[in-house]
Image 1: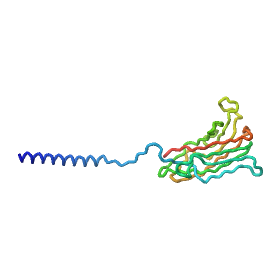
Image 2: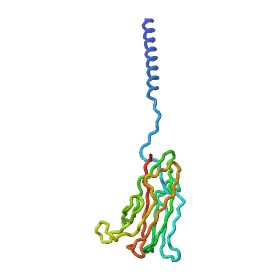
Image 3: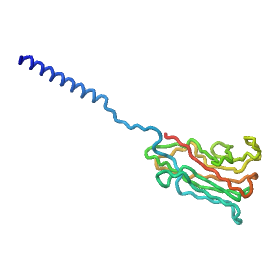
Image 4: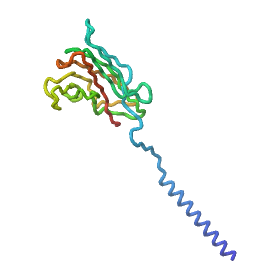
Length: 201
């Protein structure tokens, strides 16, 4: 009887030893350390100060402009959009705005893939004439739903930004210039927004 009990305890001890050894080997082989990221939880390229705007009026003071950032991130000082507004503008009136972009995504380089220029009121429509650097905003005066020559309101040029890469914490300064076209309406407020589209590389 003692021999059977001793044999049973020995078998249990051997079985537990084998299980412990196997577990140690198995555990060693599947240890994985990694970081998973789902979706965009950290933002990257944003508009930041400084920003400088001016117009081409040297002697008269008729046209007025307002340039500002909007769409502030939870972290103060970082913005998603640049807004430019003009009132009492006339043909040949121009506004120049120098703005700053910064990659605020720590540890990740980002590349600019597109620039969106739009009027969120829906009054004006955008067309690129030279991809990513020149275009115009137009108004559908005749209501046919498409662009017709002579409907240009603002001609816009912007620094080539597409395909530029920004390392973490890197900043770049760019410029946008707006010229009022002959078809702009008098005593009217026009405005548009600029957004940067990026991808992580």
